[in-house]
Image (cartoon, rainbow, N blue to C red; front, side, top):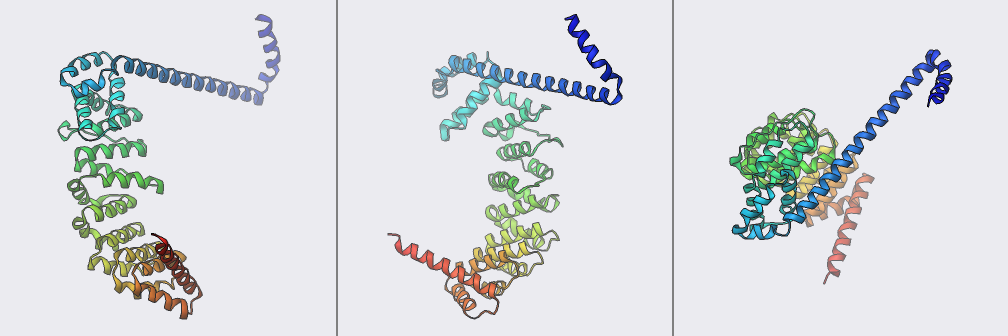
Length: 373
């Protein structure tokens, strides 16, 4: 050992005397130390995961065979709960939660009742105060299946919480019907990518109508325009009367993202007022607002939109022309008549091309309908 140390000292001594080499040696040693720390952290994570897996397996062997009988038979439930109380709450909670996700109806209600009788919902509520967001998300996922309004759940969203944690919190608040909590949580949302919209849209759709209507009262105070757009679109589908209150305001908003939301909501409402709003938005300065307005007019189904959509076929943006042509086809014979007229006599080549393309789509659709037995 001593000769090895002496050899290393003899080799590194001249290098250490040079300032540049000394700095490189320190950086290499620091990087090596960092790699060792990272490997230790990964080994610890793997050890904890395997320990948890083995413990879950032992619990399934000990309590799994009598679990279904305990759910069905109240007389056996007490003994099963007594046996389960000897295990860690997280192990028992994960075991029952797996069944909750795969069942529905009265049997699912019985599983939720067993979960609560074991006091596992109280364990999850305590975990909501954890500093580690993965633990809080796990607790919120389980509580979203068993929580009740009387539990008095209070959620504290931290500034560094990722988007998945906020979605999980929103799902839980939807479960307990906490409108004030939903309002406060939505005010913290920042939707920076389109892929983030789908979970938000699905969760808002799951809100009870009363909670959604109460949440809509704070629509103009939400800071993120994408959240306001998605909320307005969902409200038009679930609580149309409450949505009408904000439609004109949204159509005049300076943010084009919110005017897009007005187009989507107006197309779903299908009222005379929403039709007028869509006609105005068809001339919006932002091309994607015009494209949405043209698309919504087809969903609206008002035949008097034929003239406005025919004019939109001359829009300089292809998406607007495409949506206008598709909407004309959806308006039936009057719309198809306008498409044929544009295809025959229009002086704008792009409008003629779009009209011919949509006429071809309609003919292909008619052929397929004729072939269907």
